[in-house]
Length: 281
Ligand code: 13P
Image 1 (cartoon, rainbow, N blue to C red):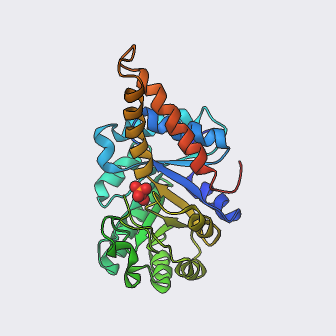
Image 2: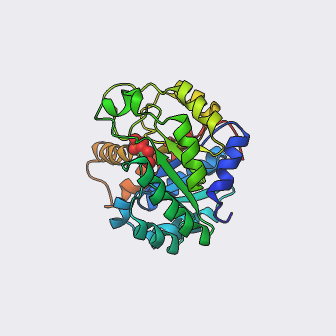
């Protein structure tokens, strides 16, 4: 299939009261295993580039690789630029073929976040590109306060106002998750999620997907999360699978034997993880 608009993938997830999983990727093995893992599981998928990773694969190359591989599978594949707070970088990503972008103004005070995000939405509309905003900062798992202090979670009335003024296509919210490795098991506030979902009409996004217990995810998908971002688990596996290969094969025949091994592990991981979502395509 041709690349699918992220807005259509999220609308379908919402219709099924479930979520699509969005994976950060950085090179051919990670991009292709995300797409072929989704194909094996018969689930849609979104492939994301985190801007700092563009030194491994530049924006244009990343976009065309995702586009090229999407054309080889039957499941819908979306392409998205993950966390970006730089207007010029976002516009460049759009020019390079990204059909969905995140305008991350979550570190800014409310009004400045609105101003920044609105300016990105205005530019993105010219190219019919979707924008994900973030309100209520999703921090780091290494800092317990970032995901346990409820006063910093997204407030339903703010989310409604933010969505209304900016015109974002989706909104990342803070309800008890954080990026990277968690210091302790996170506990999502499903109650807060339900309140935000009630107050807004747009798909909601959960960041910091590595390490959240699966029963909590099932609840979150049912109660309003339509896009779920995963990075750390996937990248860690990329490394541990290579370590494992070299332990098993201290003297491989060629210097590239490990690539197939790693890719198989990554694809199996994607296939299993993505089965957390409840609808086939
Ligand atoms: P993790 O790296 O914690 O899985 O989070 C990924 C993410 O939220 C990317 O936006």
